Structures are given as C-alpha cells and as structure tokens.
Length: 303
Image (cartoon, rainbow, N blue to C red; front, side):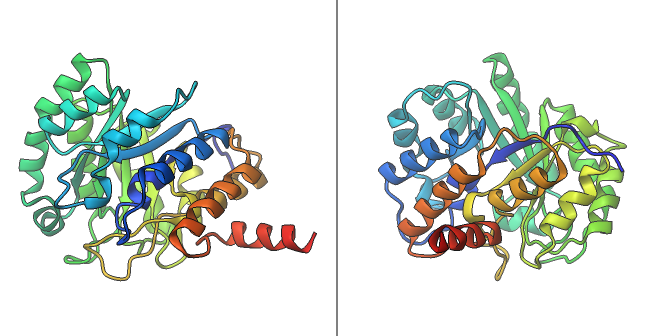
C-alpha cells in the first residue's frame, strides 16, 4: 500500500465554510480566523469570493478582509471568482490564486449559476486567460462529482470530461467536489481512475463533504491512487444551499489527525488548528463539527 509522502491541504473554511452562515460574520472575525489558520501551518487558504453580494451576502466583505490581513509569509490566499468582473476585484486585492467553478450535472449548473456546463466553461475561458497573463494560479472546481441533488448518481465519464475541459483552458489544479457528500470509497476510487485518464493525477484535488460520514474513507481510497491535494474546512464548517441536508466539508482537524497517523506530512500543527476551530465555532455559537477536535478538547478539560 503506497501513499504520498506529503499532502497539500487547501483550507476552505473562510470561504466555503462560512458562505452559508445565516448570521453575518464580522470582518474582524474572518481576519482573526485566517491568521490563526496560517499560524497552524496551513499554507493554502481560500479567503473569500467575489461573487454577487445578493447571492452570497456573507462574502460581501472579502475585499475588506483581504485588505485588513497582515502579511502572511509563505501563505497563498485564494478567492473564488465567477466572471471577469470578479477577476478584476481579485487582481486589485493582490491574491495570487483564483478559483472558477463548474459542475458535472447539467441541472445543478442551471440551478447554481444559471447556465449549462458548456456555457460555464466558455464563460471561464477569458477569465483564465487574463489570470494567467497576470501570473495568477487558477483552480477549477467541479461540483456534484459523486452525486447530484437533482439528477442522482453522476457517471464518472461526465466528471472526467469537465475536468479535461478545465485543464484544457488552463486550470493548474482541478478540485473534485462531492457537494452533497453521498460518495463511498469504491465510487470515489473509480471516479479518480476515470478522471486521471483525462487529466494528470498530480493536478487533481479532493473536495469531499461528510454528509454520510464517508469523507475520510473516500480520501483514504483516493490517496492510494496518488492524489496528494485535499480541500477541507476547519471545524467541519460548510454545506450546500442547493442540497438540503448536506453537511459541511470534511473537517481539517480530522484529515490532519488521519494523515499524522499514516505518517504523511502536512506541515500543520494540530493543536493550533484545534484552537482555530474552537475560536470560529464559539463565534458561531456551536461546537466544532470535528470528532478529533471534540475528543482532544475534552482531554484538555480533563487534564
């Protein structure tokens, strides 16, 4: 059994984790969270998005958050952008990475961004071109890779086709999202095998939600194939407004604990990360949705 020596963790809590929170999270809280995540050793942090404030009010403060962040040496901040206007805002903010987003489900694409898959990819061509000209790294998200709230199971070949097209327009990395968290390990493995025939495996990332408690098992199955980039969210924050009942992303704490036990390097200090998860959970009035965090915090109290 072979695994990557080191895994790159992309922390998506400040964007994908917080974007569906009903109560507005202050700029100061977002800045503090990102600083704590950086202190924990997370070198890739998705800090926000430049989508319509009407559609995602929680992200309306992204520019202000980025402006108030101090210098974070060694940390790459990224933002989600839907179009050229979003890219202009991203460039003005000084980030060095953006993400664009497509789906493997036609119905989800129509409900999420009001266009077909083909139209979404066409829309992103000038965005990616301009970003590359500016020296900006581009990630491409693919939603609903293991299931769709409208269409049910999604064929791996459909996902592979979208990943191929995102790679062709210039995306440096393609993040495969189990948006509603329905996948199981063998399904996840078959997905990666299919996508890897169309896009290099070293350009693939995993973005798994934990609705049915399968995210860690799915990640483990894909690590065996050589995938070495994982998206996760501190305290398990997140969800999907288009998938009722969908829980958050797999918790970063749980991923780091598993990888530590496998001898896989992440560069993340788990104790400091747990502090960050506790901080944002308290601000949101809840307990962390991470089993590792809850267990280790209980041990701290006992000690």
